[in-house]
Image 1 (cartoon, rainbow over the protein chains, first blue to last red):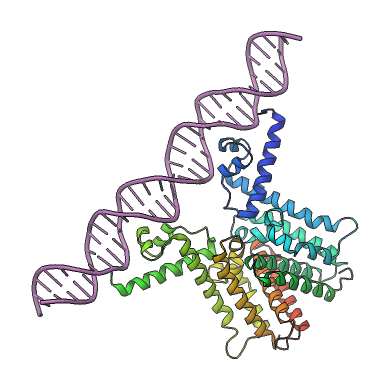
Image 2 (image 1 turned 60 degrees about the vertical axis):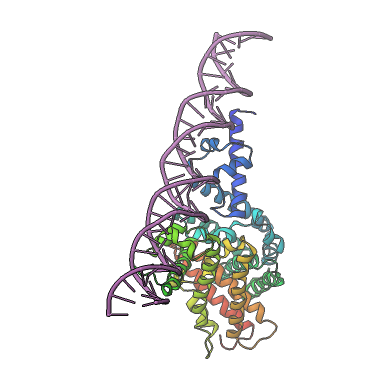
Length: 196
Length: 196
DNA sequence: TGTACATCAGTGAACGCGCGTTCACTGATGTAC
DNA sequence: TGTACATCAGTGAACGCGCGTTCACTGATGTAC
C-alpha cells in the first residue's frame, strides 16, 4: 500500500472516475460514499481526505461525467469537422442506449439535475450550451436558424435516448432511435446544412 | 376522526394522489413513507393498510402520475380532434416547465424509470405508446411516416422540456421551447399533416 | 329505542439497517543529519 | 550509507439520523338483539 503524496492525486482521480461512471448508471442518488470507496479498494473514512462532502463529490462527478461524454461528441467535431449525420448516428445508436455508464450523462441525469441546486444545474446547462455550439458548427454556416436547429436536434437526441431506454427490449425502442436520426437529418436539410 | 370502511378507499386515493404529485417534483427516490403519510395527515404505520410496500406504492404512483398528465394531452385530442399545434403549444409552455408537479411525468421521471425494474419501465412504456398514438391521430391520416413523426415529436417534446428545466432562469430556456415547437410543426408539414 | 359486541382504519413505539460524517490511529514514505 | 524523525494517505470504530417495516393497541363505527 503506497502512501506517497504523488499517489493521493491518483486516488482522487480513481474515486472521481468511479463516481462519474456510477452516477450514469445509478443516478445522482444511486451512489453511496461507502460503496464508492469500496469500488476503488479504499475505506469510507478516507473519502474526506479528497472531498469536503458527498454533495461536493456529486457536483464534481457530474462535471466529470459530462466531460467524458463530451469527448465522444467532440471527437466527431474535430479540426476537419463532423457532419450532423455522423454525430447523430453515433449518439442515437442502440450501443449508446445500452451502455449509459460510458455514454452521455445528459439523458441519464437531466431529470434529476432539473430539480437540483442552481449550482448543479449550471454545470449541465453550460455543457448543453457547448453542445448547441458544436451542433451548430456541424450543420454549417451560422444563420438565424442555427440556434433553432441545434436546440431541436439536441432535444430530439436526448428525448429519443430516454424513450428508447424506457422501452428497451421492445422492437419499437430501436425504431424510435432510427426515427429521430431521420427527423434530425430532415431538419438539417430544411435549415440549409449542406454537410448533413 | 372517521374510521368507517367507506373512508378507507378515500384515504388510499389521497395517499396515491399526494404520491403522484410528489414523485413529479422530487423523483421516485424523493418520497418517504413517513413524509407522504404526514402530508395527508396520517401516521406512517397506517401506510401498510393501503400498500404492501414502498416499491408497490412507487409503481402505483407512477401510473397515477402518468394518468394525470395523460388527461392534459387527451383533453386536446377529444372527439373533435386536436391539432399538433395545440398539443405542442400547451405541452412546450413555460408554465408546464415551471410546474412539474402537476404536469407530464415523462420528462421528469424517464431517466429514473429507464434504469428501474422491467415492471416499472413497462408502465411508462405503455403510456409512451399511447402518446404516440394520440400524436399520430393529431397529425392526420396514418401513412408510413406517422410513427416516425409521432416518435420524433414526443422525443423532441420530452427532450426540450428537460433541457428547458435544466436551463431555467436563462433566457435560452424559453427559446429552447419555442425552437422545439417550431421544429415539430415543420416536421408535421413535411409528413403531410394538414391539420398542423 | 337502547345496550353489548365485533370490526377494522388508523396510532405510535420499536426494530434493524445503511447512510454521511468524524476522528484518533497506523504505518509506509521521504527527509535530515 | 545508515539511523531518527516528521509527514500524511489511508484505516476502521463510532456517532446520530432517517429510513422501511412490524405489531400490539385504540377507539369510532356499524350491527345484533
